[in-house]
Length: 132
Image (cartoon, rainbow, N blue to C red; front, side, top):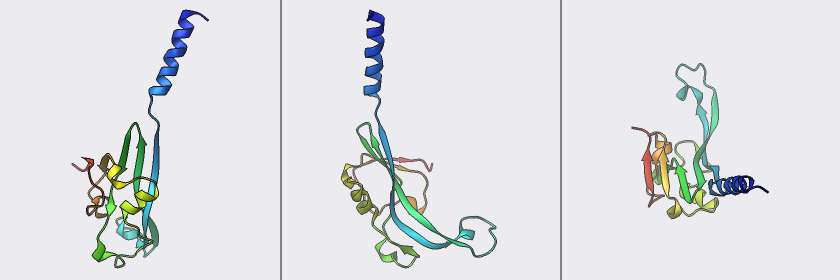
């Protein structure tokens, strides 16, 4: 094996080992049952309804555990909004084998109640607010 081939082989091996791998998981914490499509799409005709999965996203890799959006927790409103199969977002994250205190970063994609109303369920994180 030539010196150049050996160098290139070790360089490529080094590159593969230093590139972090990431996993992305959708963590479902509830369902908005029979939500009116017209509430989502301006001018939508009729009274068609659909079930909407309520999810947060968990990204792991490169020594980080990133939560994209935080979901919501409003104990007094549970059961009054058509929400079924609800699990507090921090409990849903635990089911993915992550303790909420181990989340290193939070990214809020937009300022809707179902994306950013965490109610204290996740803490100790760097927060990136993309809504500005």
